[in-house]
Length: 137
Image (tube, rainbow, N blue to C red):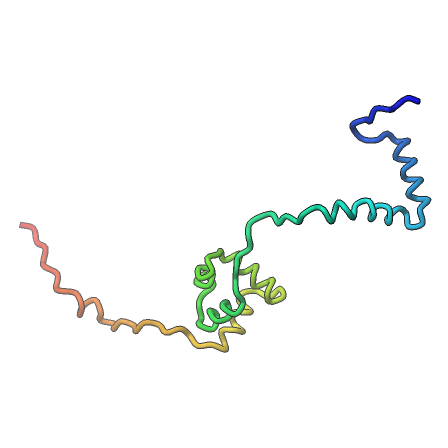
């Protein structure tokens, strides 16, 4: 009996045809066979999460900032993320709605944040000392 050396590379057509015939002869078309063979490989492989870590945006904190009428840019700066990341969070957390829809709904329940007193209309003239006259001699 001669021992065949294992071939590297794709199997030839006759081997694939035989393998397909064996699978076709099985009652479920070979699905149970593959599930048994690959179940151990799936269980043994650890799940590795790839990519950038997701931004930690709290929904209650987001709604609180909306009630205080913070802008989209201000909320994104609060959570230290981009505006696009904030928009993706809103779509995911609020079932496909946009930031503006959520903001208008949530901000209607809150109060605008305290803004500083506005300066009087004649502010520059009252607060600045008189300018010296500049003349050429």
